[in-house]
Amino acid sequence: MPAPGELTLEAPRRGRPPAHLADLDMAGRREAMTDLGLPAFRADQASRHYFGRLETDASTWSDLSPADRDTVAQALLPDLLTPVRELSCDDGATVKVLWKLHDGSRVESVLMGYRDRVTMCVSSQAGCGMNCPFCATGQAGLTRNLSTAEIVGQVIAGSRLVRSGEFPGSRDRVSNVVFMGMGEPLANYRALMGAIHRMVDPVPEGLGMSARGITVSTVGLVPRMRELATEGLPLRLAVSLHAPDDELRDTLVPINTRYPVTEVLDAAWHYADTTGRRVSIEYALIRDVNDQRWRAELLAKRLRGHLVHVNLIPLNPTPGSAWTASDPDDERAFVRALEGAGVPVTVRDTRGREIDGACGQLAAATP
Ligand code: SF4
Image (cartoon, rainbow, N blue to C red; front, side, top):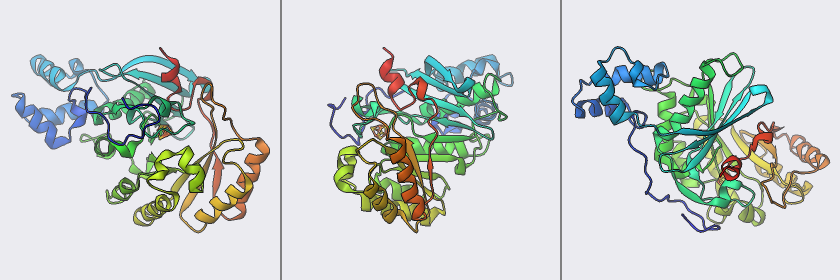
């Protein structure tokens, strides 16, 4: 594990989880079945169960012989995510789960039900190497990258909960995914893209979700933002900016010393131009740190005229932090400055605040 304060882009390779069906595309699944001495068409059957019907327990797959079910379960369906703690609020419409991974690492996901959709916030890494000082996850450093199956498994578990009827709302599955849990998703690019393909590829290859409902959030890993634009998928890109000037952003988002604001925004506009998708700019409002009027005006100047939307996030302070959310008057003035410049802006609802909603806080609070 890197020392606190150290920026880490490359994750240690130790602790890699066992291989899982969801790590593989359909060709890989067919090959895996053949390697197990089973007919290749078992891959289609297994995929229909796992991705199509969300049946994660092979013992229920009655179109396979008991011996074949055992073989598939042992080789390709290891338990990757064990729930450790589950907390809910908003009358059950927000559920946060703390998972233990096979090596004891812990990650979180949050399920949020709305009138017209169910959104799941997933983790892409155990810990995070980006070291943002206002973030609980950042303080603990990076443990390791999650595998594709560990990421997809969070969504499958969420969809199973929704389908069980224990979760309010009209949907029967997770409809939207945001990569805003633990980790910097673009620092785990291969597993991220594998997971996105498992989500958007049609059943039985994947879950058949809409790419437009998937948001990848980044602190601004410029080369990977540009790579994401070449993937041919209309994903939503969210950039955690938090400051419009390099001097402050260098301290709030330390990777800014490598990829400064101008380069990050250029890559964001390239993404918007290439995909036709509006980029979200995430800005956590921190009292007397980044919420001054002049910063709102500078932000507006840098964003004006682009395909962009600003999400202002009232800071959810981490325990023991000196930083706190902005004064409501300053928040309103910030909004007005952006609106006055014609930049679309909303103040994000802060679901899950009473259950340690900021990334990493539940894991940090659970022994
Ligand atoms: S805010 Fe996001 S990128 Fe920054 S340390 Fe926390 S999890 Fe990592």
